[in-house]
Amino acid sequence: MIYEFRMPLIVNQMTGATLECLYAKPGDSLKMGSKLFDLSIDLGSVFAQECPPVSFFRVVMREAAWLRKLELVPGKFSQVDEEIAIFSTTPDEDIDEPATRTIRTTVAGIVHHDGMWTGSQW
Image (cartoon, rainbow, N blue to C red; front, side, top):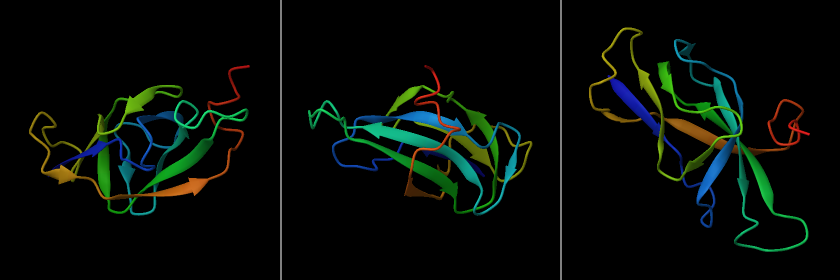
């Protein structure tokens, strides 16, 4: 079966999120609980203030699957509902087939850490 991952709406006012770091790459077999990536959401354009409201989140697998395609690199901004990853139940399924459904994941708020893209480019 083919699954897709689209950028979820994590905060009502967000338009998208920036990839901070990757924990998986295409070809990886992921199990329930595997980390996929960390994201940041900047609401500075919505809530202008001296210190921009930036929050960090981790996306984690809630089911086992093979990561087949990933359209993200650290620092890339993705719009809400943009398709950014394709998964399959076996490593050799045809990923050109339409996705059956969205992959099951969970999102948790986290704090900034040294492995993130934000702050590393200076």
